[in-house]
Length: 123
Ligand code: SF4
Ligand SMILES: [Zn+2]
Image (tube, rainbow, N blue to C red):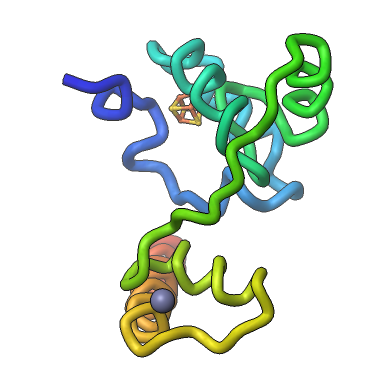
């Protein structure tokens, strides 16, 4: 079992971790997480945005500087994934078909999730 499978955020809306308006809520989830340390260590080498291991980007930048860690760039994000689409975007090129379709799928999923939430709140 990898640490990810024990993550407290598995069933939590991922937007929470990537929207600064929800930073406190995200950190509260991390505070209950059994794999917070592993998540933070992982994120120090790879993550650019969002809350990981209970820390935001700024705190991670500071920790990296302190420890002399150089972040691996996400240049190897695979084609056919939403991260691949973001990589194309970062590199200023149009997404390939596989990435474009992965990104459409991702946004469809996100929209469906927020619709469900809205319905749950309304009912
Ligand atoms: S520390 Fe936070 S972001 Fe990392 S796995 Fe746990 S809940 Fe998720
Ligand atoms: Zn691609």
